[in-house]
Length: 345
Image (tube, rainbow, N blue to C red):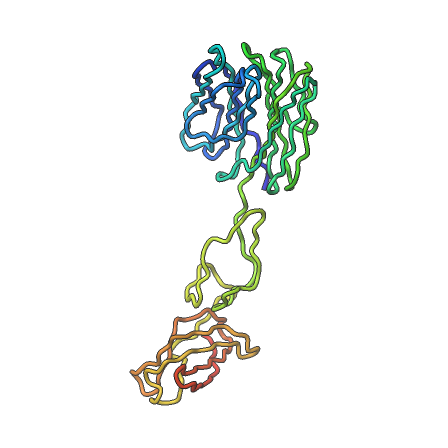
């Protein structure tokens, strides 16, 4: 398994009021991310329908910019553009910009399990992106950082060890956006990441992780018929779960056995104590004849009244052909017992 790789990124689109933002190439199942920067912190941002809020930094002052991120898992048919609205800013200056980028192979249920935000309020050429704690192995750390310099001549150098995906600004707002990512092999704290800008300014930074598809669960061990607590362990790395059912006394379990099983058939299981046991209630115990290891405990049996020598039957159980088994029949009303050795066929 690998961390979700970067897919594609669109260019910055100036948003004034309500504007369509162009989507880059995306396939069904890809994680689409939408970034929106509003020039003033008192803005009301309206994302497209069906997108989920990821993180945001709303400034304390109406004269500082605002940064918000959203996500959506791409379906089989997505529009080429999405409508983004910016409104409610002082003086009617409802402008900013938006952009969309993608990652492939994410967890389709919880694609962004963790995120964190940080406002760097002092002018500096360094912008600190906060640490996040990844929840599992093979995730992708993404850092988004926006300069408050109001000058598109400003530019970013990504944090050390990370790959830059965007370094762009647009007028009239002028704020320069940087994006970088890196694969994270192991779960745990990523540590802070520092991007560098050419102009000393404030900055807004958001860090988040993109989760990969969890591995399918697998089972390693032995399931014994009639065993409520099977021996063995489930492999759940990192977040797998067992899907299915283990049914007591299941004559036809899903899957396959090696070696191929034989059967204990009702015709071979005779309790030879005569007609006195006709239509009587029984239980049966089946054990390996060689080791006395239990194979099956079957209750709720009734002997047949159709023959002189009663036959107690039950659904065939998976055993190894050619192996000897000790079968004990016991009347549950009187306690009478009988035992015979059966070779599975």
